[in-house]
Length: 342
Picture 1 (cartoon, rainbow, N blue to C red):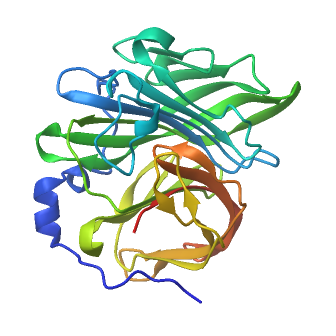
Picture 2: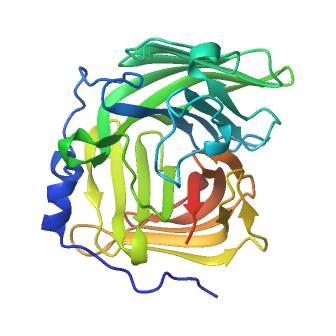
């Protein structure tokens, strides 16, 4: 049985582009002077992220997801971590399929973290250290059952997810190459491939999101595909896009014929630490058309049932997929974020 959404409300493209300029600024090189600062001025919340899909078992995926300052957005906020104030509260997810007990933690920015205001060095207690400036970054973790040392080289291929008018909220993702090692209980595994470096900053505003999913597939050693779907009140579509980019191509955005459906959910709903009830997908599929109206990519996915809490106020994990991309068969391990309070 397929679980499609009920009838969706789509707003005219011209109206959306007046509010969100991200579509107007795609397929252009990343500006190396772009700021990646910590909370300051009107920006009371920032997000740093590194996502590594298609890892071999037992890891399947790795995401380093940091939120500094808690947002007003209900779907993303970890209110249960706030001990002093929202802007003093940071949360860190070091997510991978092995699911170590200390994979998600909250910290006082003032007491537990050492954050350079320009984002060039970000230390969260002994949990995570991210250093560097574009295009060279370095992520390390020591002293835990699960540790790593990863060097990330960013390209100028950027996906602009959101650019709200007035700069109220901005979110982008860089295509990167990485190499290094993962260390689980003393056993090191060398890794390399394509990943992302991501940054977002937001003013103290609420965006009424009801559903959010973000997925990453590395098609080959050069090509990466990103899927984003965001649903708001009354089943209104905030975004339904597939981004394609490669090491030698800035790529494009595809929206025509977008369809994401779940064939089977996990049997039991989960209740998050913030009291939100969510159901996670077990089997699902998605597709989008190219500019000529033919299928660009078609994916059938099956969850690896390795979702970890801490992707903001929801879950992140991986799935096995098979399908087609530009008419050629593909398969592998995809990365997925899922937040659903509908």
